[in-house]
Amino acid sequence: MFLIVGQGNPGVQYARTKHNVGFWVLDRLGSDFRRQGSAFIAEIRFLTATGEWISGLLVKPSTFYNATGVAVAPLARYYKISPERILVVHDELDLPPGRLRFKAGGSNAGNYGLESIATHLGTREFHRLRIGIGKPPTAEDGAGWVLTGFHPDLAPVMDRVVQAAAEAVQTWTLEGINVCQKKYNGLNLAEPPRSNEPEQAS
Image 1 (cartoon, one colour):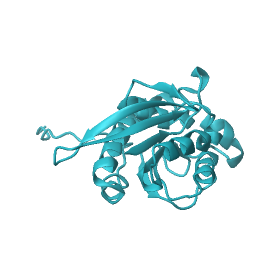
Image 2 (tube, one colour):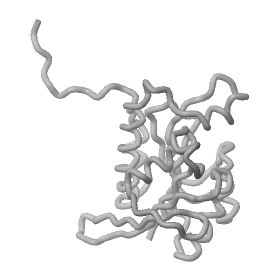
Image 3 (cartoon, helix red, strand yellow):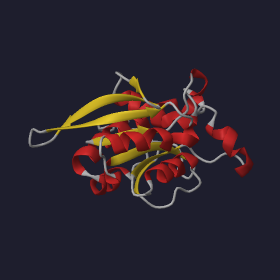
């Protein structure tokens, strides 16, 4: 059993903001969300190479971003899920758009939603999938930056990122974080896709 937690804010006014990219990834993975406690959850299953099914929950907290732990901790306790089987998908100011980065435990680097999860779980040892949103023009603009949308020119990049992140979640579930770090941490999805077609002589 595993938990995939998307960080974000509830409400249509926040749906397309940078802070909600975690929700975007979960929406790419499932659609049958139902209310349970302080979250909307959907069941998901992945098939292993040996033909076994591994099941888990997609979790979109109905709390606001900075209170994510209020939703996550009760679910983890109820389903007896260890921190290493919890993956939090969230936006990351320290990565540019187009980048993904897996991380296990460690500092929460000022992310109050991650700090809320750590406080309510009593540990920082859960896993994270960080999705780059880039830095604001100045440090003082940070709060407003995460609550605005991406520039329209970044729409194709973010679509590739969300698709790659959804695939990465499945890889994490089936193969673990070490495989994910090697496979995804070096990707730059902001680069245009390379064509496999041979160049034509002019």
